[in-house]
Image 1: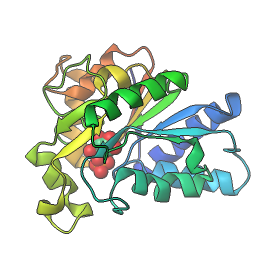
Image 2: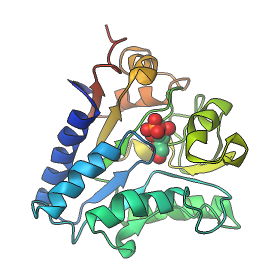
Image 3: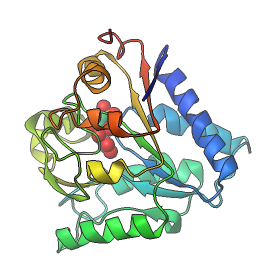
Length: 242
Ligand code: F6R
């Protein structure tokens, strides 16, 4: 695992956008795994600027989703599919037809999870997967005590994650309780994992991920098992590293 400390979120976004741009130049039809939440927004903004400037050609790029809420009504603006359309697909000029994601409104959710695993495998696997980290150390929505070998499945959000995410909804009651998430085993199959963590609120989780023991109590510590994992942290998020 390589750890890169940058000054702030904007610098982290620029650095990672550069790595994604290099991947696309090398492999124009790469499968780019994206995360939602606040942390990756500077990455998407920096990439969008490169696309607008004609420095990056995304015409063959494919994009896939890490996780999705279960049970939000169709078209809900906070479904992760809707968020990614706004924050990633449109600014990067990637058509819906090049987007893969699990169906969080399926009647048969276990079948939807299995179907998404198959889609990812049929697409040749994820080339670069962006990750954020929860204050409790989750990646995707693999909350603490997730199996390190887990595959895409339904998970129940912890109260802490629901409170953390309530800022995107009109109050805690509206935050879904269940999600579909790529499993930790699924995430570990991506060829390159890039985790961005910014802000002092992530410092404890970052230290446990990078320096703590490998443990299902800190799902992000599974990155220690990956042959090509890059953890980019700003100075605030790095403050508990030894
Ligand atoms: C969402 C996801 C989550 C977030 C994490 C941090 O797709 O994968 O693991 O990355 O909850 O969220 P923010 O970035 O909003 O602090």
